[in-house]
Image 1 (cartoon, one colour):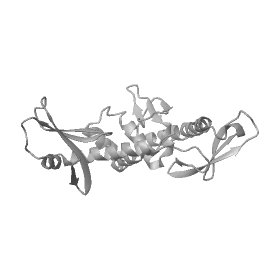
Image 2: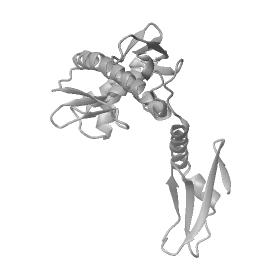
Image 3: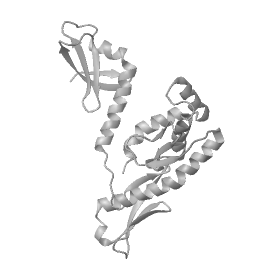
Image 4: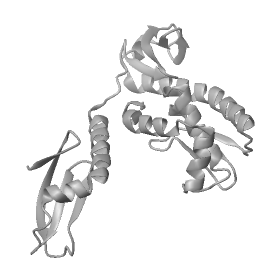
Length: 241
């Protein structure tokens, strides 16, 4: 497979001819990579020249592909000593045996995420995962509404209701009814990352799109929002149950 170097990064690609193609195009799929498509009788510009012309787009797509590859390789462990992110720190999973044969619960104890369960469930990944999800959900319901209120008061926003959800890809959203939704997995991120998401959704109370006016408003209240958007793209694969 041919390659090209772009800003020190190696890009692998394939080339094919197409009867239907009317112009040269680059197709990208996070699982399969880049494919350069040429009309049948077109030979110029060369693949290298095409990739250089589209360099900015290609590098962004390459970042997406590497994030996808990380996600495919990553698998959360639910065994003694496993690590779980919590508000910018890492908690060590501590599985302890309890007397109650049915009661299962999880709590934070210093730098540990303690899960207490009966011996029969000590190796039951589903039970342990459910207990940990309940822990994060409970923490989110305590932390997020309070922090939203603090930031809303600080920056002069008014909203209606807050809902806490467990979603795979969306960190936050704002409805036309001025309701705010936040992902409980935000508790796996640093406090400043959470603030950036909250500010993003609060700004949608005034601008319900992603226009320049919206991003200018976000930057006014969260000057480092670009840094945190990049952080979520690079670390999102790790913030899962």
